[in-house]
Amino acid sequence: MENIIELKNIYKTFQQNGKTFNAVEDATVSIRQGEIYGIIGFSGAGKSTLVRTINLLGRPTAGTVTVKGKDFLALSAKELREERKKIGMIFQHFNLMPSRTVFDNVAFPLKGSELSKAQISEKVHELLDLVEIGDKEKNYPSQLSGGQKQRVAIARALANDPDILLCDEATSALDPTTTKAILSLLKKLNKQLGLTIVIITHQMEVIKSICDHVAVMEHGKIVEQGEVFSIFANPQDEVTRRFIRSTSSLTKIEDLIKEDSPVVHLEKGERLVRFTYIQKNVSEPLISATSRIYDITMNIIFAEIEIVQDAPIGGTVAIISGQTEAIDRALEHIRGENVGVEVLKEAN
Image 1 (cartoon, rainbow, N blue to C red):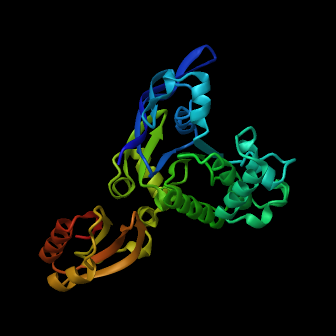
Image 2: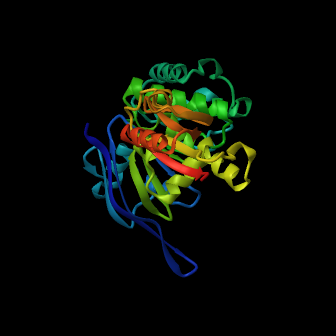
Image 3: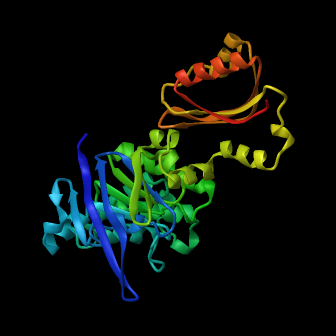
């Protein structure tokens, strides 16, 4: 699949209080046509600044921006305006016009187009049905919930039949249930329309739910990028690990160890072990099979398994008891099945 967006060696420099600083530093990103690509970072990481270079709402200080094979930095103002019509954008706070109805908000980008009034009306109704809010066309934004407002914003962003949709913290102002519904809608639009979606977020749950690839940013730099499953299964950078820890209950075991909780008290010869899936093809019921083969006991304290990119990811924390040699062989067997093994505590 070919790349629809290529950002190469992007720098964005600002002057502040007489000093120069790089909001984005040497960032390179390739996004394939039809995928959902996530860019995650804590506040101030530079993710919004980087994404705004895609449609040149923020021109980079250095680097190249290629979209659909065109060098955007070489386009005339008129050519750039035409290209921008094919890049939709939605925001955290919806940016709807409060004095206009839902219908008029969605119709606004079609103003000045070659479509007749009847064609615009038909198009708006199609879009409102597509985002499942067809019954709200006469309402004003103040009469809508947050999720409904974002659906209107998405419909408006789709008015010019874009190939690309940029989502800047589009679910940050929404509650978890509404977030899930909006992400589900974006996934539907991605499949149904072949839309390439770029999502900026500070929420790892968003990346986990719908993204194919992810770039992790910190202090203007991309510190890690790749397939979402691989990043979750085997994070290389401390920033990535912090994000993953924020969404995983498997890290709670470290707090229990620090607190010397009775839950993690061990008898002689026992080991407290955390298993994590690090490969997509892990499907063997490892714990029960390994316990039988090596005649050991695994007492599961807690487990967390979820599906990321149609594959199980997560792991299990367990106390293992049995003969020392048998435990060693069992752990070696599990490692051989491409499962991460960490001995967190052992009692001699």
